Length: 261
Image (cartoon, rainbow, N blue to C red; front, side):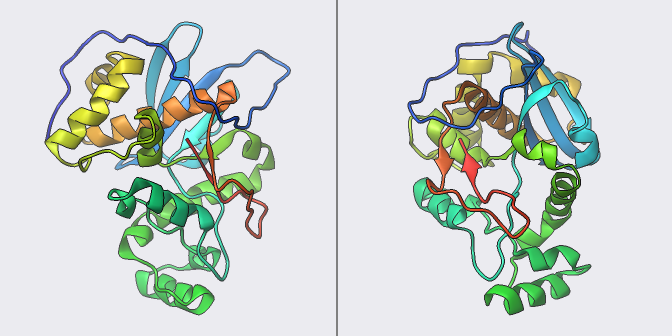
């Protein structure tokens, strides 16, 4: 495993995009932005104060705790939010096509019927009945985190204007001027090409986070993925994020089936 050297935290300039995305105005000038990735300890959140350029990492055990900070204006999180019924999501197919040959990194979101399952066999059978396809084991592995975020967003509807689904590889794709990453993030070359993008905008933030968060709580690639989500959080706040698909789709609970980047 590659490890980060300890360096001083720094910030850089924000890239520009031409496609407008959502932005929510608040009565109080709150501008903390947050990128979030799942990790072995729960959720790794990296929070940016745009006024100072300070990036602060935190670990949260569950989504309710993650979303409890009222000073956060935008949370970009790597997890499926809107869940389909009877079919696959349009956004997953579009993202896979854009990211080819890295398209396999986008797991199809599970149908909502699988959330109540307590075993892989039950979840896979529920998926087969609902949409005609069995659930992959990769998707089942993140089902508890999907359920965690889904419950939070349904219990607190006000969060829907603050929490946005992203996918790190789609973030890196747009970050690299609409080019998929050449190498897997699990390879040395892939790690370096993503770290170079991160350093160009966030300076030594990745290294600083590694010095604070133990490897047993979050892996090196979790840190880069969270910072990729943070890059998109900046674009959402600025109103320059790209949305997939172009036409809005919502699930049976009114949650958007989309990704921003």
